[in-house]
Image (cartoon, rainbow, N blue to C red; front, side, top):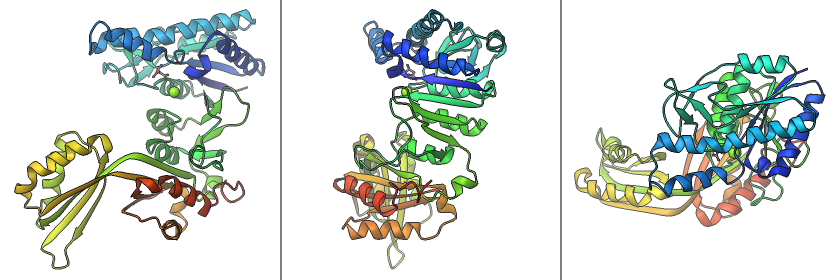
Length: 410
Ligand code: ASP
Ligand code: MG
């Protein structure tokens, strides 16, 4: 008998019929004598509707009141699910975040969980009930209602699993697991049986948005085994865990990519200490996040070129900041390109296998794809290419590393 936290997202509880289907799934897990704690999101689209409703009163609703409004979405689904379970003879009890209570800091709209009281949940489980908790919400030390940021029910699920020392946290969603890459680009993309927390973070932050990133960080920190599964198609899903011997065999987990990139280059700056700070300081001060950075020194050592990437939405602003600084920096020219994309190969196996970067570059070269920038970390190699090569690049790498083959990878 295990203690399992199951989290169902908005599409899984989108209407009464789907909530009844969730109840059936929960009951069948309960019938296998597992202790079940369920976390639910609001019905699909509901949180957006509530935000729009708030905006009819104030264009920028005061965060405290907005959280009060947003938290109602999940309050509806927990009670509906409790009723649905009782109707099929499965005793259940629902709790809002403040009833548990789930204590957070006071950062409305992006609150962080500080503490979860487990006594009531433990008593209900001991009495044979299914416990249902509203995702995405908590209460601060002063009794104000808070929310955890969009997609925050994932974090509620993981945090409850950590607090209850659950055997597994299952995230039910509309995809049946984590894939080697986006199947819309590479139809041969394959569902991974397992992936490490670290790899998942790289895949998620690079655009494979299956889970709220914060929930994966949380799961990694507290070592909560996390499983992503479909609410609609049965299957084992993808297990996200710490690295182990088995995973060591996996050389590459997948290919992440992002289209929302732009790069800027400052050419011919006199090379002296403080140049990088002179260029990037004002960018940081404007709250623009910089991703890759490459610096080249001229052959005679007198000047340097510095190239960096930013989110495409920040391109214009970054360009203007560089231009405003051009005189002070003594740069010869400023250039930029906002039609670029980033491709990243991700895998813990890179740590122990040489030659992966060479293979990656060779396969891109064979297709005539020019690499404009490169950056690496322990478990990731990223390249910047022209946007028009994104799809071809993803398919080329998927093919080169045989990611469609179960026996080669995982
Ligand atoms: N209902 C919230 C949202 O739409 C939280 C969640 O679904 O995880 O962001
Ligand atoms: Mg979600």
